[in-house]
Image (cartoon, rainbow, N blue to C red; front, top):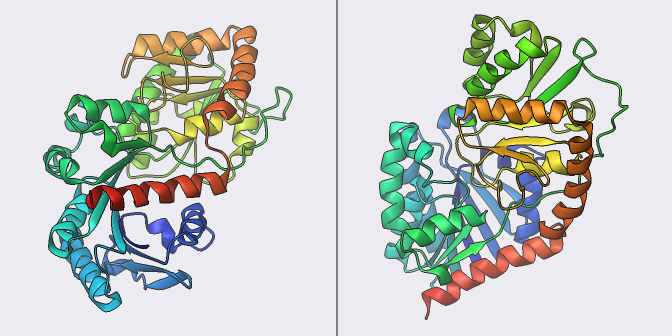
Length: 381
C-alpha cells in the first residue's frame, strides 16, 4: 500500500527528532510513504529521504495562504508520477482543517480513500472561542469528517464529541499518541535544581494561548500569599513567552517564576519538582500528563484530554473545571499539604498507566497501519 500524507509537523526536518524516528517505523509497513508538510519558502527546507521508501516534501509556499494550493499541486504530481490508483493508495491528513481540505480535494479528484486524524478537542467551547480562524476550521470539519473513510482520534473525549454530532461510530477509532520509554522515576530526595524554593510546581508545554499559562500565573500569585517560598517552573517555547514573562513581572511574582527553554530530556525537572500543573483550555490528549505520571509526579490538571479517561480525580490525580481559579488553587494546596496523597497518586499511576498505554512500538505501528488499511476497505465497500 502507498500512503500520501499531508501534515504540518516541521520537526520531520530535524535530524534525530522523535517524529522522524516514528515516521521511519511507519514506513516499514508500506510500499511507499510520501509526506507533504506545510512550510514557508523562507525556512529554506528541501525535500529529502528519511528511508529508501519515505519521502518528505515542504510546500515551500510564499505565504501560509498558499499552503493548501501548493500541497495539492505536489500531491497530484506524486500521484501521477508514481501511477497511484484507488486500488493501492490511501491519503492521510493531520487534521480536519487545512490539511483535511487538501485531503478531501484529493479524494474527490483522484478517487483515493481518505483517513482524517484529530489531535485536538475541536468541539471544546474554548476551541471555538480562540482564534477567529477556529470558527472557520469548525465549519470545514463539519464538511470534511462525514466524507472521510476512517477517522483516527487520540482520546475517547474526542470520539464522544464526534458521536454527538452524528459521525458514524464505525468510522471512528481511538489510537492514543505513542508514549516512549518512561523517564526515570521522581525521587523525593533528589537534589533540587532550584534550592531557593521550598517546593516547586512544574509546567511543560508550548507557550500558546490555549495552554492558559496566564491563568496559572494568577493562581500562583494567590498561592504565594500562603506559601511565599514556592516556585513555578515553566519549561517551553512559544509565541506567548515574552507576554507571560511580562505578566509575571506585572503580578510581582517574577522572582518566584522560572522560564526554561524547551528540551528533550525533562527528567531533571521531574526529579526536582513536587507537583505537575496543567492548565490547558482544551487538549486532544495531553502527552505531557502521561509523561509526568510515568515520572511519578502528582498531577493537578484542568478537565481536558485524558482527564477523567486515564486520570481519575481523587484516585490518581486531581482534576478541576477549566478556568476555575479557586478550584485549581484548592487542588494544588491539597497536594502540598498531604504527603499521603502524593504517595498514593504515585503508586496508583504506576499501576494504572501500564494498563491503558499501548507501550510496545511494534504493536503501535501495526495498529496505526491497520487503521489506514481500514480506510482503504471502507472506501471500497
